[in-house]
Picture 1 (spheres, rainbow, N blue to C red):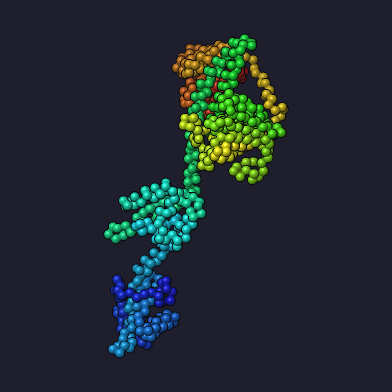
Picture 2: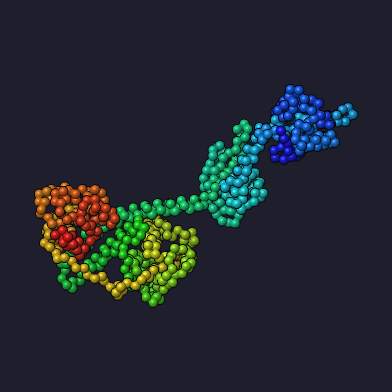
Length: 636
């Protein structure tokens, strides 16, 4: 058995004496010279001695040198002061006793002996150690822990609270916890939590914490009542966890989920749009074929064909929202020419008091990309600028094209922007401008500042997506009442071989044969216009409405057709099953699928059914003629 002057575990002069102890005590009477005069039997577990003889001898001899000297000094101190002293005695790490030394006085007030009263404090010591560990764990926890009284006044906070709020622990004690919930919305969250606590429930939620420096962070909190005796609530325990980073990741996940939904929605819209445009473009070209040279209606029909071409490209742009990379091969074209075309297209709908200023300051305005997609970016920016100035008198729309060189670190808002030569397109208006909170969300899907029913909130989302795929960048600067300015960087890229904007060389097509074609479609308008187009091209056509009719026609004359055109109206197995049935009756029959699906999905369908080619809808005369000629030339 050993004793020590370590106050945490063993003999301690600082521990106050107790008048009563819950545990029974063992007593040993010690003479002034240290001789043990009497001892309880229970002391055999605390003091080493000759148990058979029942003798202990000197108290100091029961210990090793250092501990023996300690007890010699303790007894001497009691004899000198004639007052009680209390120490802690450790028989082992798991067994601890409280030792209380009490002087015994005679009638004259002289100390005749010292009573050493020993009480087993092992359980108390274990509880103390557990509480110490618990307190250390709470103090060092990453979450802020706050303990309040029943009126939400702070009684305890840990170090994480100080780091999270910037308020020192000493200054937080006694302060009302509600003062940390800034603003009406956060105060309501506190009140909701307080109402749940009054019912005895545990409440959890998320709130916005404003620290002492004015910075905000998102926090997840859990609040629990602290129950005392007789079922009374003595206070409340709050746990705050900094979830700013988690909240940011959740926001990114929601954005990704929105984009996935947009991609699915855009795919469906593009599919239906292609099916609608097919008859329009074919009928317009049929009418053009019938008109005599110089007919004034030809210009209108050509504009219809051109508009359908742009609508077809719009379907591709909607599909691009679901793609991670650009699918089209870029070409070289003049940005200034495209901008002028957009301004001309926008002109008839502009307010009469709106002025437009176009400034081309670049040495050369050629870029590489998809002109149709860039056309959509420019039209979105111009339309938004006009919308911002619609309700004011007058206004100036400024469009500027200039050279730009991007170096490392020039665009901190776009750190992934590659250094190099760019063309910068600036679209500025003198409209009402935007506040900072609106500016932060301007590129979010479905976010719109337009009146209800006048905007989808997808225009700038699509524009940013297109520019990003071109490895460019788009930024916006705006102030309330001072207008808005968009800046778009388009990479110039290497110069293309040949003259800029030159049309691609004509392809040598095989001669048009006299072929018999089986056309299968579910849409009556598409069947009608395609049959007319094929007849105009000189082919013999047998049109079938649906899978059953096509199967019966093919079964009657398996060798009666040179090629089959199958219109895949909807995604699914119908087109695959029909193609397989036709090939079962005639294995060498070339089959071309007419599809308004995404190119990758259409190719998968083609491989699944064994067809030869896919012709994307809507298509014009030339595309239809080219695919038929090429397919038949390979089949011969």
